[in-house]
Amino acid sequence: MARGTFSSGNYFSRASAVVSGPPFTIQAWWYMTGWAADFQLVCQIGRSSSTDHRHNIAVGDAAEPLVTCYSRSTSSDRSAITISASDHNKWNHHLGVWRAANNRQVYFNGVAGTADTTSINPTSLNATSIGIQTNGSNEPASALRIAEVAIWDIDLGADDIAALAKGFSPQMVRPDRLVEYLPLVRSDWSKSGQFGVTGSPAVQEHPRIIYPS
Image (cartoon, rainbow, N blue to C red; front, top):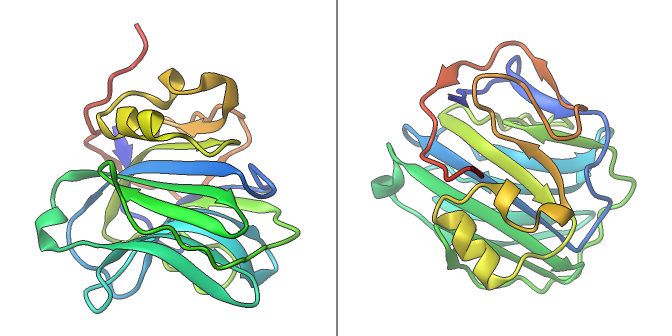
C-alpha cells in the first residue's frame, strides 16, 4: 500500500544525501486528489540548513500546474511539463534525470519534457526527504499519495525510463546502480535502512507494479 497524504508532521527522511550530485535519477509514482495551495514536494536531496541548495521532483499548484525536475543553488531553474485536472485521481509516473550540472530533464508517464541547461551546482548536500521539503518552506505533498520512490547514481537511458513508466519495479532496472528504494508498501522499509518516518503517513492504495518473481 502507498503512503500519504503528507504534512509538516508526516513524512519520510534520511539524515544524509543519497547522492552528492549528478549524474543521478529520481523516480516516484503518485496519486493526486486535487491541487494543493502550493507546490508539493515528492522527493528531495538537499542541504538541511539552506533552502538554496537542493535537487527535487515536485508537483505544482493550480496557478502553476506543472510536474518538475528542479535544482537550486543561489539561482534556480527547472525542466517542467504542464499537467491538468485530468491527471488527478489516478496513478502517474514522475521521473527526473540529472545528467550534469547543466542538464536536467523531467519525464511524466514516460513522456520527456524539454531539458533545462542552466548550470546549477548545489553543494554540501546532507539530507533526503519524501513528501516534504525539510529545509525551509515545507511544501508538503498534502494532496498526494506517494509510492515506489527510487534513486539511481546514474542518468538512466530512454529504455530504462520507458520500462519504469510501464510499471516495472526499480529492482528490475539497473539494480547495480540503484542506491535507494522505498516501495512504501505499508511498511517503512528502505534499501539503505537509513530512512525514518516522522509522524504516521496514512496507508493508501498502491499502484500496480511488476515486481521480480
